[in-house]
Image (tube, rainbow, N blue to C red):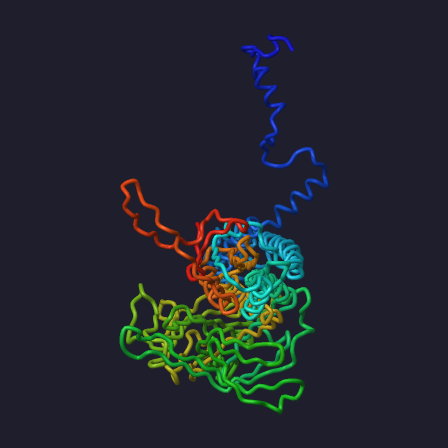
Length: 594
């Protein structure tokens, strides 16, 4: 190579020749964000290693936690379809965006499922090799004693007249008594303990895997149905009886458990005084239920908050309650055309409730088919009066002063169109509000009162009220697996944090002066002071079979002035002492090295 080859050529944009040569000669790896030139299988292998790494598993677990947040903040169709409809009606601009992002079905969305499956695969790829590795560790013998035990973090040694074989045998017995796995080799014995640390680590990963598997099983083989039941009515667990039903891939209407129940009564109590006045205290739904196909063989039960009724493989949860005014409507001739208890839905903590009454079979008036509709409020504790700005509002959730405010409409309810309607709302597009004295027809009724409708449309009466309760019938077979996995994960985490894996070696050899040198050394796989205490206890117990000899003091040497020097204290074991040139040491205080 000529001299010109090693010179940089200015202005040509290339590195100097000497730098290029150095780059060709260096063994440092070329920095790149991903491997290059390894082929398809190499890329697949690299992707698999990245996916099964601890870092990626933690990232996926964090992403899964973040992805679950919208499911707790936004109403979910699988939990309460009516609440989703109410939210969508109040947020019409955001609804299309949320629907595209599948935020009303977070836990069954594509993006949540992708994170879930990736975490599943990552855990499986992490657990399997670690399990085989741990099995290999269990089958292997404890590692032999190092050549130089003085280099271990904890070390103790002393001289004794006992035979080396006697000292080694005594050490084996002591280690086994302390539940060490022991392996003897010649003049040394090795002991290892703390395998439960890795067992706890594997148990944590396996339990987390079981937890995710339980959730996956629940999502694939579960179903949830909702039903609103008024006092005195019953429910049979069939699709036609449910207000809504959400099945899964392996659980449909034909898989529903055969049972039913009758709501005898519902009781609720509230705080009557103090700062917490009006806060709920108890909710109890008293029922009689049956299983199988015989509804005559019933059992009594109580369903309360967080205390569901378990029937077969399903659980019946109490999720809400309210009031159902009993209303009677008569036509102009006095004939009863409607009589029923109508559920009104709560709108605030004081159970100010809204509802509608649809009288589709009113008949004819003046030779024309007429339908009546009523919308209004039910107030468990109504004020004496309410202004036009505040509107009807209840003062207390209990039924201290019940009243109902109604507004009347006539026209076409749309019930004959064949299009499904919300039973809790009126479609006002083909209805006309009745007028009374030039004002919209509106009245306030208390139990037992009636109202004569204007223009000869008959009358409506408020006969009383009942309470209703809404129930969620849930079949989730994976809950037990998920709960067991969560509990075992906690136990595994405790074991991996508290159990310390450690090794102890004991060697006994004969020194040139005919004595026996006993050496002890310990090594902990984690930062812990327990290994030093354990080694000291072992050294003390071992001296019962191999007692330490009293070391003679070295003679004093006069200094230059002829005076004797002060005697030195006996030194402990030298950090650099080797087995063939041991230093004298006492076993009561093993040396701990940083």
